[in-house]
Image (cartoon, rainbow, N blue to C red; front, top):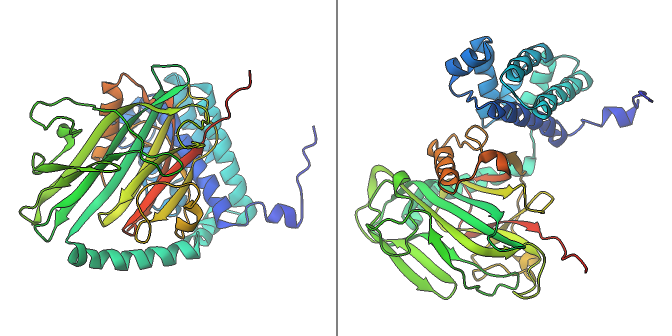
Length: 417
């Protein structure tokens, strides 16, 4: 075997960009998360996790910071050393962790330490180096502009939310070559400064040509106290949920919060969950407007501090690749998703897609602690397990409105013969 390592500029530039360094750090976080989840541990419960692993509680606390921090660059000093990783791996192996998860963490930390050595020589210098790292200058400028707009939107539109989220859980359909979908969406921390009616949820679908597609959805929970068809997930809602008005539109149904009292009274949360059968054929088809992608969309009309868009793919689905994410203009264009005009509708977006699992640690949102509970509730209701899925997440702070977030994956070609 040739163990010769490249030297000179090629070697120096292997980790010469912020993005390359971040990828390595995110891989450490993902590997830590998945290893702990594989033995049903929650690092958020430090004492319990330390007791189960029989390792130092301070080490568990540091691992928790690496897993949970929104600013992962602030956790460099908390990333465990290779010696500490061996303690974690050994303890997890004793609890029955899969060898693949253990090996993934060992590999991830080995690459991280290689990055530290090549870029800075030691962790102290590496931490100082990344402390001033701008991952993307464009990203920073965009966020500042979006935040200024957000701060004025409550007075302009009269509404605001802390978190706007949408989650698509794709599973094999009840018919061959068909994909079913469980959709979870909502607004958390919702408030308004004007007593106006406001749209809070839409149930609609369209093909790649932008044509509305008739769909049949079933609420996850059937509650007699709700109007027929209203897919509210009441256990996770707070606020005047029965005061919701269905509005039939050419593209589907829009649910509005009726005009009423306003102000910052309570922490209003609206969570919707339904199941869509025959959401997609698993192969490309021309039967419904030349569908080449499996796409999910979240129309953003409510000014929000954070938007989170997750998709989870069942491992039995033969769909490969990483999703593409787009932010589409909704000010100068109509609703829907049109493949032929999508390039013109795209807005400037500098972002990254994160790998997540459906487990309670990896899927958590710091601004919305109930999110992982909602996801677990839906999975349990549908007799599904988190380890049956691979997932991807897009987040954006202060998303502009009106816009639409689209995440899409290319569908495989239909086999010949």
